[in-house]
Image 1 (cartoon, rainbow, N blue to C red):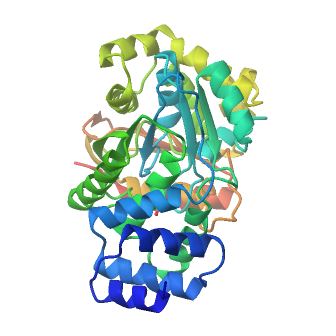
Image 2: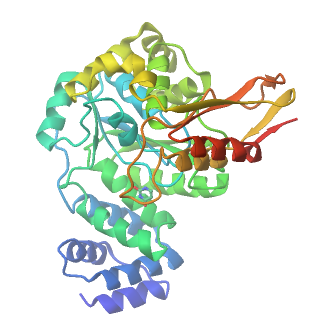
Length: 410
Ligand code: URA
């Protein structure tokens, strides 16, 4: 294989064969192909794109660059969801235990937050003692006992993606549909799934800003998922206002506990039920009943205990992580809430310290926003629009000063 010729071929709009793609990924993973060549190839893919066949071959090569979770022939169906991420998107914490109540196995491998988007692992780690880094043996143990497990990527899974994503991050090649498809699906399919639902978001608080971009990514992921033998479906969701009523790690866990106990909020419950019914064997109304009865809440507590978390902390997350400075932001006049901009609220939450700008930054579990009002509702003068939880007086004042730019009442 002559790598400069392959790069040139892709640069000039040619297609690579599955064999060439496999050889490139193997050489790159083993350290036999230098980063500068892989960066050049990623840039050629960024400009020229890939055919569905090439994207499928890339996904498969990355999937097999490391270990995959193996399940017994007679094991229950394995299902999962991937969300492209948004503000206050906490659906995983409710969906995984709900699906496990349906007799399915949910071996959910998730990531950390970056930029304005929060991460499932950060939310879970706000539960005292909760361990997200489990060995493959421990993952199997929790799944067999509980039916769901929520963990970070192990060292052995998809090493090609870890290396390639790090390069893309510093070479301007993240926003490429074939590269995103291969990156996301290689990690998800390494879970050994039968069914996958993709929650592709678009809007001011999402990676994809328009419905059209989200549609293209969704189409690409569903095509590749199906080509690799996984029943894949998609839900496009708008992310122009935060999901639910909170954004920030411990605040979101507290909201999930309320939802698992049957107390909404409605938009969060609706997304969870839509996504769960796309991969479950029960109907949407049966799943809603499981949620209402508290089955998923009991399952969530079992999972938290199995992963070392303190179950008794779950109903008091607001006091376990209490920010020192809390203030309500109120409406100055009455009217209809027209805009609660997800991108803007995400930035406020990031600046409060709930998210990270660089992968190595720490996150503050206590800070963020809650009691976020929903658009379309009638607001009276003096009503609370959002409540801010800050680590310092300065951070609180800054958040309160910028919030009016992101909220409109008409
Ligand atoms: N998330 C991923 O895991 N990979 C991408 O390429 C983009 C988002």
